[in-house]
Length: 264
Image 1: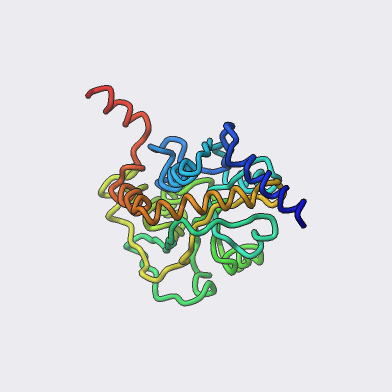
Image 2: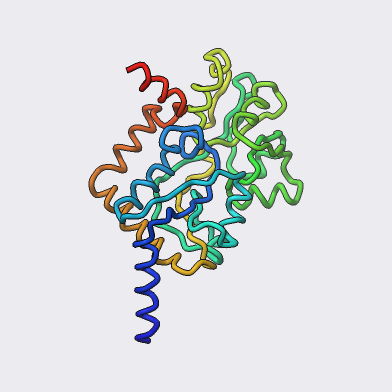
């Protein structure tokens, strides 16, 4: 028992004292994560700030979402940003405390309104745009596998929204904040005016950082992150960064920030 305790302390010390940045597998989902976003987006910036309070540096490696998850699961990365802490994921990962709470909703064109719906079955008459590798309710994935829903999977939200505007799909599933960012950055006001949201949440979720169980020291890394996250929450820094996101600061491109600084 004593030897095991010493080993855990040693591993914890290794994680905290290492000068080598921890590698975080992530993907692009503006304004939460993105290799072209200021500070790598809201969630990744929170990871950076939380770990910095513990004297730990991180670096982000951007991959397609499905690949980032699988690579982290195999232990190729110390952390995975960011995921819902699904029960099946907990077989392979430790989950952090939640970083934020979010909502996915259904969006449609105003001329083809979506009537009141209660279950996934009510969506059978519609063609739905969704993103490969994203998380949705289990019933949604099951309905896709069983061919109970007509779903077109694409690689990113901008393509999905383009399909909606071009009448290739009837509905898209998207985060409210992500939709606001997309419409502001990539679509005209005229296009945005054609989109309407159904008030019923498709999914309410909590966002977590994952730590692969296959890697030694993952528990200590998770504990370090949770301590740092708690500091950010208690100091008001997390709320400050959330407000930055709501005001669109993370949505701006890195090169746009560089241009502004050059003009000063």
